Amino acid sequence: MNGQDYYIPAVAMAISLVFKLPALRTNWRDPLLRSVCFLLLLAGSVFTFAAPPTIEAVNRWTGITNFSAPWVYCLMTAFSASCLVLLLNWRGGPAEDIRRVSRRWITGYAVVIVVIMSLFALGSAPVERLRDFDTHYANTPYIGAMIGLYLVAHTVAAMTMVAMCWRWSLQVSGWLRSGLVVIVCGYAFSLTYDAAKISAVVARWTGHDLDDLSTYVAPPLAAVGALISAVGFVVPLLCQRMSDSLHAWSTYRRLGTLWHEVQRTAPAGIPGVRMSWWSPAEIRVIQRESDIHDGFLRLGPCFDRRHRDLAYERARADGEDEVTARAVADAAMVAAAVRADAGDPETAGDEGERVLITAEGARDLVRISHALRYSPVVAAARRQAALAATGP
Image (cartoon, rainbow, N blue to C red; front, side, top):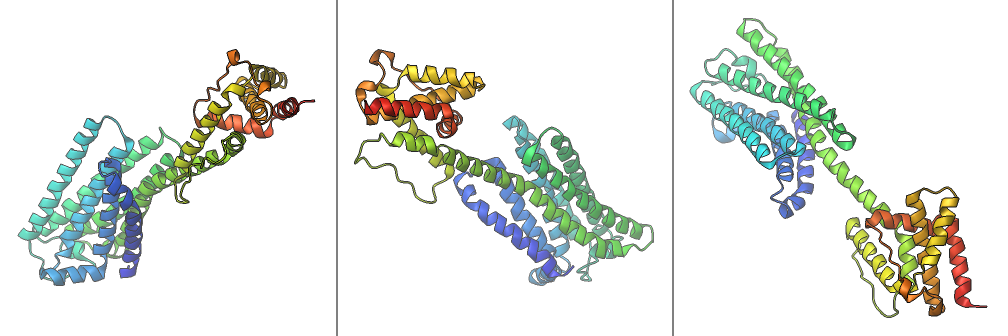
């Protein structure tokens, strides 16, 4: 692999991190968001510093031959810990339990990082090796132990991630399950990387030569595994947010018929709430719901229980279920009230028979809006109310 093979995924991770930074600034206390951003930062750092051109540059900048080796080991160890911590926060549970287990993983891998740097300082690696450091120094005192420690720590993290993600994927569905399966696939590549590296190092310990496994086979596996794992963490969160946004826009659009109906009774000359084009769909839905409920309050004196009861009976007679029949009945009463308000107020219901629409949330309002647009029962009630309002 050349430098470009490492830098392209590093740029991809950096772009993903940039898109997450605005949310991080406003929700710094969110442990899940912090974990995602830290994972993206470490993933990009691993790709950047593991590239051969960067390895050579870091060795030159520090003036320490092969300093890049323990540095990359430490970054990958930290990346392993960040994946475990992110998964804990993602899975959820009691906050104290999450913090306690997270601290254990962080402490354990922090110790590994300190030991890695200590063993490198104690050992001797005078000849710069940009691609085959692991096998070249596998039998060197302290350096060989450092390499073995790093590989064991990485393997333990990969096996733990595979086990945790697979068990969790069997308990959930949707985007979350897809993300967990992607993570398992990514860590399957990571385990194959570990197997190739360990095989090459152990072969050196036993006097054999399987260097090609470490030099040429393992690096692509590590790059692919890290990239897939990072995607597995990020994509479900992103796709869920997109799904929620699409659902909100759909709700906003489906409320349109009811909103336009009640807006016909809005007092002239009173400006409505104007929203900027970049306003989130969720805010638009809330504003549209508020406008509809304001319209219900204006139409309250014109609501007539007789229209609702008659529409309900007709909807049930047509085979509609209870929930749909209530929505049809409310829609018919709204349509009749709008015509009464626009015509002769005397056609309104008796003040003593004041009726309220108790729609609970956007879902009930969407049902009323749908009935207002498509129900033949509502259409009949609208025609009847219009005739009554215009008089003979």
